[in-house]
Length: 114
Length: 190
Image (cartoon, each protein chain N blue to C red):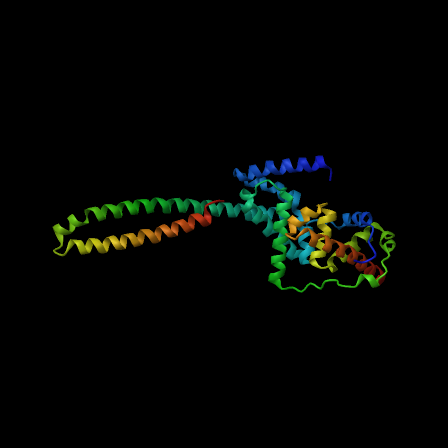
């Protein structure tokens, strides 16, 4: 360790003069504008997320109903194996539901809070 | 700062944090008004450029706004916020890959005359202090401003910078020495 130790009080006194003031007079307004824009954008996104959730629930409900009534519809109108068509539809339906659910979860996690 | 003043400030901070968290965005202006100067001083210590420092402080305030709900009030708001500013400043410095020439000299070979600085006029002192801080390394000027200007304790400085207490002490010790050396160099060049 070096021998010389500067007088702390003197340095403390001098360092009081090292405070800088923000030289940009519009700084506060600029930051507040950015923050308000951000809040506005977030609110818009949250509104869209809730709409997405609503349509997801409606779509899932409709898809489930179709799965339920599909065998009856097929048997009355198309002369092909109802089981195969139902299975294909159900597989596609589950795939769509899962991918959409993943998107929704990602969105909510990303923009869940303001 | 007096203990009472600090307690009042902490109470006010807490009040405004609650306001912002409950949706009053305009209440965040309180933090801008009260913390922008010290945040700017910290940012300039690291990045050494007033325009980049402004960007750093802006980013820090926006990040603080984003993370205000996660602030647990166990530490002081200032400590938490200055940590954000410090991280942002070092991130910016790294990004810019700007070479800051640190002042490294063997102080044992130098004779440090404090009286030169103390005999200067107040305005001159302020000018030379700012100049000397610009010449010091980011770590050293940061620690001097935090310790003497913000009057933070060693522990608080550690919390803000993320350094261990021993690193804070060593850096502070070196910063003090180098500060006087830079002073002397600048004043002698005058």
